[in-house]
Image 1: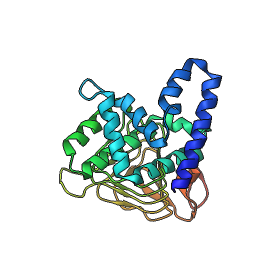
Image 2: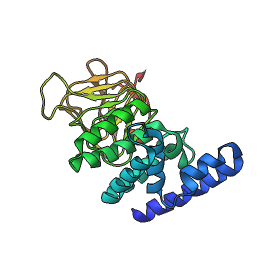
Image 3: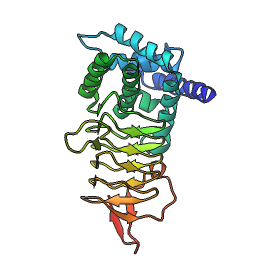
Image 4: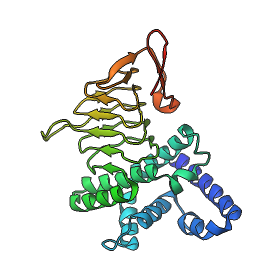
Length: 269
């Protein structure tokens, strides 16, 4: 994975160098953000700290804090690389690897959360809460620092996504804007969804309670899911109902927003 991350970093540097030549107005920004750094980790730390700095915590303090987190947990950098590749492979608007890193706030929100989660596990919960609040203000995405994320996560656009404290996301998951992974009722404890590998969740869907959305399931846009979803199953509606369970594809990779009932009548989500 380290070799893949290195190759990705070299590709990003080449893309950004070309962009700086083509758009002189942004050359200073691109040099400061990417080209003057010697690793993907340093770029991420600088870019996030630039966006999230405030009168309370300035850029330099955040930069050092983020470098500490990335150095203390090498798996974060590996997950960052997998997330960049996920955007490149799944989002038709993403035709360069540098684009999520530079411009996609859904990607920025995921990476800010990865570092907040590292701080949370280190016992620095007050700081993790503060930075989670700041990220929510800047990116419009609200992720509790305790939520657990796998690799290859894509949050497309990002606006309005809410992910609760005990939510767990596996690998290779695609989430569109306005999605809520929330609790149900006011009870404490383990109360948020568990999302399996390969799942796609459509725009403005709500998945509520300590339920499991199993491997390669697909949730239609605007759906409200309050019960477990079996593997390779498509659900849609309020409350969500099964409309297909014959597929063996990975919805998060396909990003296909259609679904079909048993009689193959077309619907759209």
